[in-house]
Length: 388
Ligand code: SIN
Ligand code: CO
Image 1 (cartoon, protein in one colour):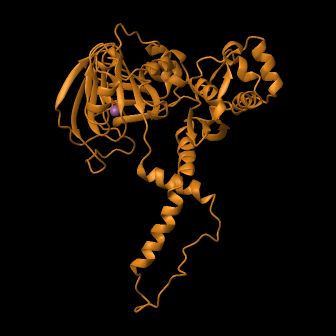
Image 2: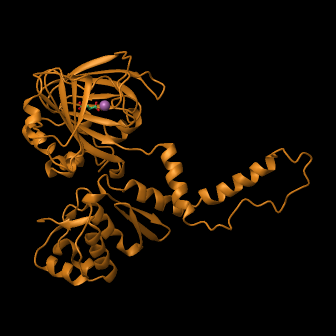
Image 3: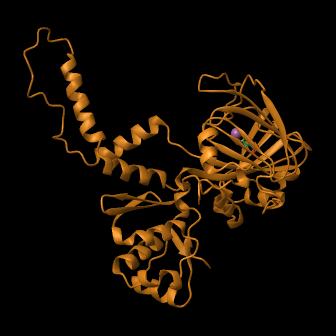
């Protein structure tokens, strides 16, 4: 993708301009970002998903049994027919993992790293419905799928911003509106992290939220140090072979801090381990139970492909790759594999994983490592056969 091509999705901005001026900085409203957009699923199909055990869904009812009542799915079918006429929202998470046409929407966002994408959440709101003024810690593109929604934006927030007393929802106690727009199907609003926002359905409406993810500093530190500690032996400790006589035995001298800083720096600056951890962490699936594969021998895979089978990425799997010196690292759903540089094009194909078949895989199937890798990924559940 050429970063200097104007994109309709970004209102004629290029990816480079959008990243420079808006991404993580300020909101952008784009009228007809996806012209003539028609939601690939309707309200009934969305409600159908919310009945399923493996699907994460929520109902927010403004004047329910208590103000801003939150109910969590899976729901029983008759629950929807008992809802009030107005002022409620059904939210279904990660619809991209269950509806391929929704996953296809993500193709429009390929100017951003795929490992930054969290999911496509879809909400259906009855007139007046919304989840209250709030902020998210993530970037989000709000695409109007059906009906009209009035989006208001407000102040920048943080963890000190006052919230309403609510056990489950983080609703802002104060909302200082700065701008508002009514979005129609195909219109899109990009919001940077922590910007207060509030969407109210004008009529029955569906909103697609393409949400991004970024680990918090606290997550990076706890998870990376956990990962690192597997490689450290008990003998590796604070040492002070250079110790000098102390004047006050109860004082912690600053030379102790210098030794600690050196210990931390030695381990924290191992780039290969940092990359391995990061790739594994960022490709951990949202629903690991949906990433499982069959028992399979190299030969079986080859037979299936020869008979016309097509391999695609399991929609619940996450894939990414990187390079270390002359080698490559493939990250697949929380696991990493060090691979020889000659497999670069295969890795790129696997990560894009539109469709892998005998014609485009051809030469890679003759390579032991290439074939072995494909087989491993099928067994792990990151790749699967298209007709399964
Ligand atoms: C919604 O679609 O109702 C909520 C989306 C959001 O505000 O993040
Ligand atoms: Co939000």
